[in-house]
Amino acid sequence: MDQRRVEKCVENVCRKGCRAVWSDIDALESGRNLPEVKGLSSHEVRAVISELRAVMAVYEGTCTPN
Image (cartoon, rainbow, N blue to C red):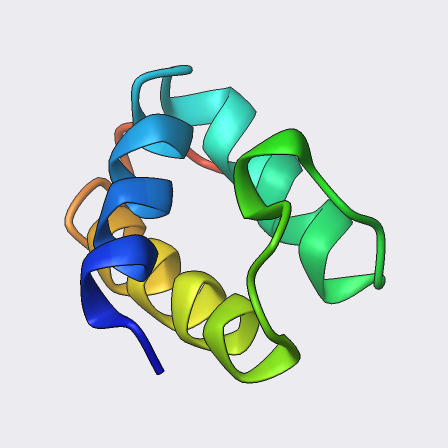
């Protein structure tokens, strides 16, 4: 797994904003691909989801999923 690629993907998704991140997490968990994860292995995509969930835990209560 290329941790640098995972981190770059997480950064790119987070730039979209709080609500978009929740939407992207849902999309990834449903098996849909996003441009940000193009070229990542399934293991790396799972790592992206995990890191995005960890980041979003900080915002719980101030930005919730739609």
